[in-house]
Image 1 (spheres, rainbow, N blue to C red):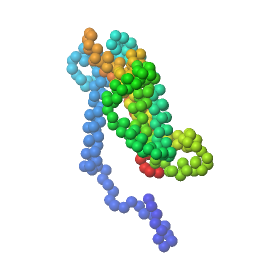
Image 2 (image 1 turned 180 degrees about the vertical axis):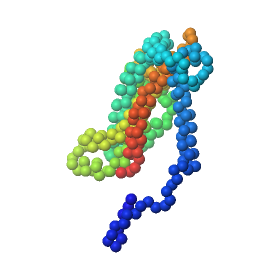
Image 3 (image 1 turned 135 degrees about the horizontal axis):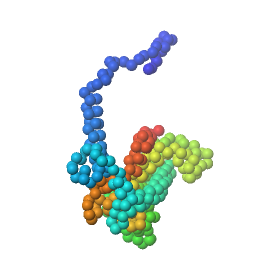
Length: 303
C-alpha cells in the first residue's frame, strides 16, 4: 500500500482494479500441467519402490503398480550387502564408500580452483584473459568421449591411471568449465567498488579473495557443491575408465548387479540397488533445492 501527499495531507491508496478470481482457466491449465508432469516423473519411482519391496513370485504376477501383498526388505539388504557385482558378492557397500571418497576429494578441489579462476577473471584481468575464459567455456561443450584416450595416455605417463588421485583429477578437470562460468558471473555481479576499496586499503590478491570474495560467494558455492556432488556421484563413464577396480564407484557396481545373468534375474534386488545408488543425489536435492535457486538468483542481477 502506497502513500500520496496532497495539500499537506497524507492519503492511503489501496490496490486498484477488480479483484482477480480465485479459479481461472489459466490457473486450472497450469495446475493440470504440473500434476501431469509430476505423475510422469513420480510413477517410475513408485514402480521402483513397490517392486523393491515385493517377493519374486508376486512380481511375476505382473501387478506393476500394486502395493506389495507381502512386504519384505530382504532385496534391500541383499543389494547392500551380498549382491554379486561381477565376481565379488559384497553388494553395493564397497562402491558406496568408493563414491564417498571420490566425491569428498573431488568436490572441494574443483570448487576451490574454479572459485579462484572466476575471481581472477573478474577482478584481475590480464592480456588474453577473455580468450582463456572462452576456451574454458568451450570445454563445457566438448564431448567427454573425445578426450578419454588422451587422458588415459597422460595419466598413465604420470602413474595416476586407475588410481583414486587419477579419478579425482579427471573430475576436477571436467568440472572446471561450468564452475568457472558460475563463479565468474557471480563475481562480475558484485560492486567493483568493494574490490577498489580493498585495494586502496592495501589488500592484495589473496587478501581480497579470502577476506571479501570467499565470504560473499557462499550462495554460488552452494550451487557449485550441488552440481558437483550430483554430477560426480551419478558418473558412470569416468568411473569405469579411470577409477580402477579397487575404486569402482557405486554406479559401476550397480551396472554389474543389473547386468549379471547367472541364475534368476532378481528384479526386486535390481530396483533396490538402483534406489540406493540414487539416494544421495535425491537427498541432496530435497535438502538444498531452495539454496540452489537462491544461489542461481544471487548472480543473476548486476549489483
